[in-house]
Length: 103
Image 1 (cartoon, helix red, strand yellow):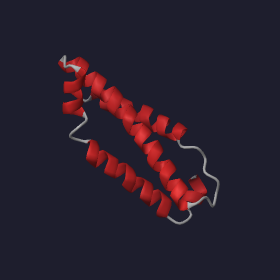
Image 2 (tube, helix red, strand yellow):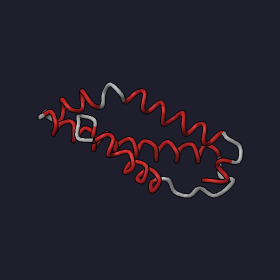
Image 3 (tube, helix red, strand yellow):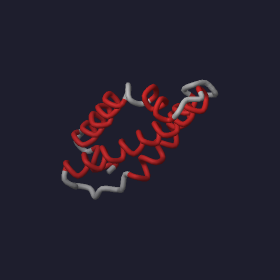
């Protein structure tokens, strides 16, 4: 937890809480596009928490300026992480009964 990736690891529970709070309860039977858009937004909000805390810790540990920490700790992973958020949201919106039960 005190290594270079400690900030990212520490941020996961906080990101889950932030995404959960950012994801309002969607009325049962809501349009699939609304569930999808809300899930993507909440997922990206959680991802922003992970990137913010992780990059800050990385910059502190390696004594890097913010731009260099972003270049090393965020930019190589953005495309794949955003794709994972969208994929998870698509699955959540597509599974029958799931969105009515949990959203």
